Length: 255
Image (cartoon, rainbow, N blue to C red; front, side, top):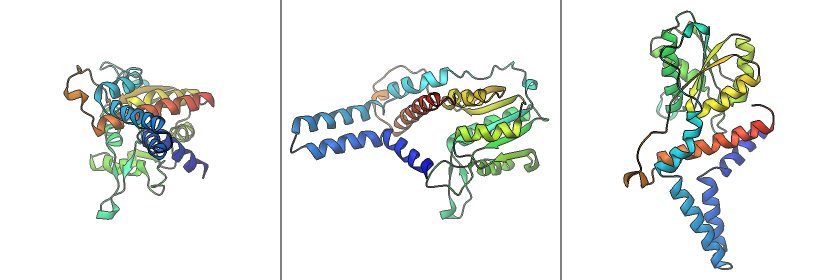
């Protein structure tokens, strides 16, 4: 129950929920305190606009991604014997009779992990992630990713899944038991790598960071980039989530 409540509080604190709450509060105050109410509404709208445009979303997420450069092309993959791919979401498509589908992030992580795996035929492949979404507690993201990996030609017997963890810290705990002191190549989205790698190393695990799924770009500011888009709002929200989560776990000694 605590896990679900903490998730609800976190997502209420993140945009766009937090900004909607600010604007709604302004609307409630409009008759009694019109000037204060207008200030709340304007602040909410302005903040919503800013985090929905590319220059701002890139500025928010780029520090996370620049902290995790990609693996060099000449990197020796023989320095590790296990590849760990962290799940990043799945869609429940049972309503149309289809099986679970990995999210965009999960798919990007899986594809990159399999590229590395193809270069390491003797490596152990582990996919980790249950589901941390309070609305989808009965599905396994790792299982959905395994199904896709099998469809892409990987033998099911070569894939080990950890499908019980609900978040990164639980994945790290589970993988510590599975991988032990082995060196592992950790595959996850670039924006997530700073927090994930810090958690794994805090537990004494020897990891090699293999980030993928980069979101920020080196584009010049233009009129088009100042048009708000849902994708930029999502990227900004992801960045805030990572910053808040990193601070939270830092205060609790987990990173």
